[in-house]
Length: 417
Image (cartoon, rainbow, N blue to C red; front, side, top):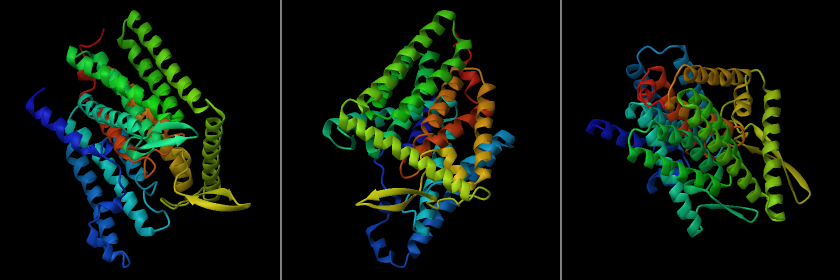
């Protein structure tokens, strides 16, 4: 790799550093003296405006000179990303200033992912950046589990949460990076690169097991199947059989192991059942919000989902900012337009990746599938999934690189078996 490429890859990694660094709310970034202005709220308003305008400026400056004249698929991708940035508040949903500040922080995360992909220059280098960051997060999760920090106890099961203290957020990151790691491994650029990718794949896989996330396990299963289906035309019959067997074994072991661990004793079974009921109640609340506001939606960042909470014989409606399902969330917040945009977003991604032929594009297809499947059960970004925005931005950036024909078809040519 040339010196310039190494520098670009390093700069891209710095942009996605939030994936590795401990997650902190935006308010903790403010200096201590700002507390004097909390009552007035003037600084927070200015801070939110700067974040929002800065993120929009970054996206505008980045897209126009970099991509040239975008076609319709690129426009749909970028429009979807910008709308997604306003889908979930990351701070207190009842405070208007917090909603603005939180949404601008999401937009900054997505913009960072987009820029990281562009700076990396090729799909394979951008994938390497995401894989490295996810692997470091997985290693941190192991260490945290050993030390008893950054974990979540589900019943009697101790689950790794990484720096986010959220196993589902950790699981989504690792499940999205794993197909990319496997794809780069099959490109066989060199023995060292193949060994590094194989090591990262094992680290990511073990991290998925330790997270105990059922959603991420299903995401990995879906991503592995899609990536394999895309890669089969590039493989010989013998290699295809090996890949099919590997997918069947690894995905089966992961799904079965996670479910066994989550239901091993009565305490865990009750915790898992309670979690399932909670997910269903969130989905129902989101659909109720959609039926009430189907035309225009309840509004972005409006904490539109209300769930009944029973305590001391009294039932109260508690408002929450997420529906634990990206499609339902867009329907509730944006109405019919949100559902249409979700379908068009997915359709444009599928159209781009189906036109590509190569190991990297196969891995990218698997990463998108893992991200989407996991996002049907857990928040895709926001305060409940802080790395999700960066991952979304990187996946969109890599997809746009495929549209531009940079680093996907060329990088996989000559590596067919």
